[in-house]
Image (cartoon, rainbow, N blue to C red; front, top):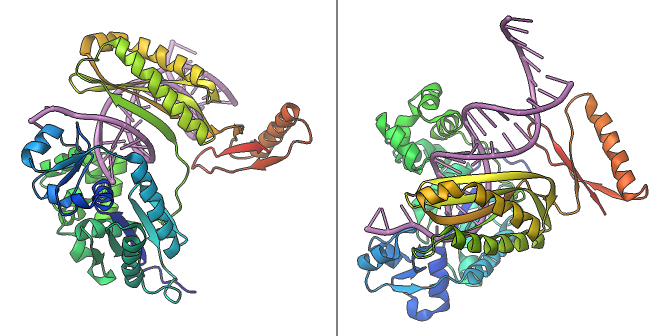
Length: 399
DNA sequence: TCTGGGGTCCTAGGACCC
DNA sequence: TCTGGGGTCCTAGGACCC
């Protein structure tokens, strides 16, 4: 099937007020009423609450002031996780190419399915209905030629909407939007752009790339220059593996001593190593994250020679990092502790980094010899090539 | 107004290697 | 006595996203 590259065949599907919608689905008394999920801080809010000014990440007391009749419910993370899995199953009924972005949104490439399911906008309509019928949740779908436009379209189309950006109407749609709508422009970058008099995407598009790079840095400059000109060649691809696993915990006002931080740290390491082992991964780098009373942050990290999933080893490293940060903690007062594990490898894998060029094959031969020595000459190897732009990494998994 | 928890990617300097 | 060019990895910080 010939698929013209300019067919508007990318869908961005985004569940509306996800956590709050799950709560309203599961408890009829919450339907049509302002719902806030989370106590200390707002994790999610229904559209009824948003109409009163409640926003995600807002402090709970402020949210209750804005919306006194809101029903506040504690989060039920496993219910949301189940709902998410069910929704992704529906997505997979509509396209083999689904890229999950988070618990509640995904891209779908539906090009070439015209004769099987229907046109992209028909597929979007059917998808909305299927999610509603099979999972009981409202969802908004944006349809466009590129990922970026599809994502913007779903944001503009919310809630419970369907918005198609036709190929001949892309710049008309894009250029009047505020710069904050550009994917990758947050508070800081928006402020810098505003300082140069740039408030709309159209205005950004009129600025040469080099000037943008000077304003906001190389990667961001290139990125938003391309987006503002409606250039986004990224394909929809099934998600690559996770690169880090972490957990963090904000300390209450009365438990902000280094001793409390250490107790919290033990729990975090336990949680995170359990999750990592369940995923059959091991980590080589341990990162300790801290936040202080003045809301500044610091990280301390350490990389060990051999990746591990052992709680004890990782805890020992994390504790040493905490000790290392003690002067900082004493000075500024600690308010949050977090651990992240990165440089993940497959458990039981032998991970090699091979040089480019002529030595590559030689290095691979040498590595295979090492493995035979370690696991015996009849060991069966499964090679997985993890490509990287420079210095590809090849884990070899003994079966 | 007082700020949770889980992630991704980029930048920049320094150590080290050939 | 002064000092190239190309690369990887580690550490720390920062911005952004949901």
